[in-house]
Image (tube, rainbow over all chains, first blue to last red; front, side, top):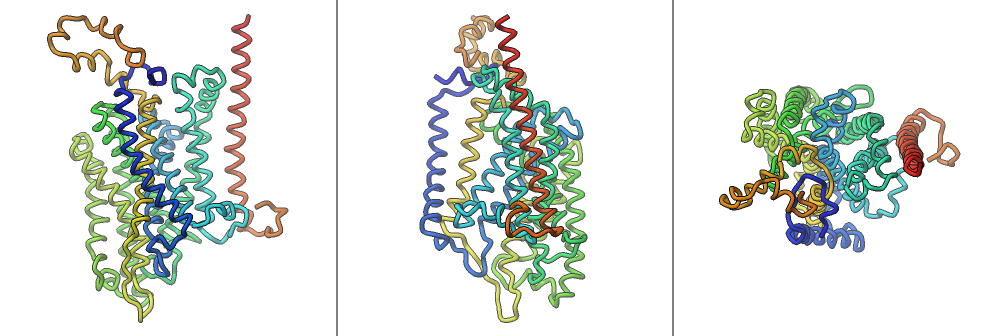
Length: 441
Length: 52
């Protein structure tokens, strides 16, 4: 039924199966939309946020998806500016993942501000002394860049590409993509950094406060660095999950290995810098503010030294050690472990820098304040995940996201595998291909 | 925010922040305008060639 829309040279599941899958995920999406409407109509009293937790689950999710979406700007930088041609096989998917992450981040902000109709205030009545203003500017502009990077892929759809104007538009956009990629890298550097800068300048909260360079605390640089290091790991992870779900190899090994290698070295350098930063904070900054290190990791039910160990050692040095060695990144099992650990590591880092900061007491008469999100917060945080799955499913079905797919999965092989051995022997492969429906042939 | 708005102040913060925003928006806008105009021209040229 939709065979005319499916890219040439690839095989897709029947439409009913696809609709069933999208419908099942759509139910989760609708649950999230319902919770979102509750927050908009009834207000932020639907959440468990309070005077202690002005930043809560949403801001953690926001910072996390932005960091994970960093794979798009970093892969784009490597592909278009540093000329790593081999990454052309994965750049489409990196852009798609980045698009999902950034649109999700904007969606989360839309319900976090409580009054989305006043979203434009930040541009018109900008507070130029706030790092969050820079975040808003760069985030919006970079989402525009990601949309521009995503449009040529949409225009490559078989039906759309038949229209002359769209065909040429896609071609022209490809031609000057380096300009957009460079702009995107510039914008990403600043908004990733400013998100890190926000906790770093909180001099009233010694758990987060960092010294730095000029107006930028060290967390500014660490956030950008960690996004560039762990974002590509997320791209690899989603690629591997997609390959597992579709039971097909979609990207050539050389592209994944190069990305994994660069990511490994980035994680190693980042985690060394993070370790130095933590040591300096623990031995100089914290005592200078009148605290001892153990104060931030004791007398509460959740936050112990384990979080520091998990973030730096298990989810930092371990994936770096796996990915920088050829043997580690070539082995599928260790590659899976490394990318999962790297992704968990950046999630833990953002959790500590958003929620542990809020939980830790700052005044002598205060104690630790714990927080558990309401179901509305959980549903609205799961909403972008469902949206992402649906968008990936639609893009995978109708757009040539993976340029290597026809080459890695020749139709003759797929047909031969699907048919009974006797039938496969009886009929020549060429005839089988001629009998296929247009979408499959 | 533009320099002609009443909130505008001619200081470094406003110039850097708002200058950066308009600079980025201009690159994106000009880039897309170039692509669209060139696509219209290319498509019409192709159409003319097909007629001849």
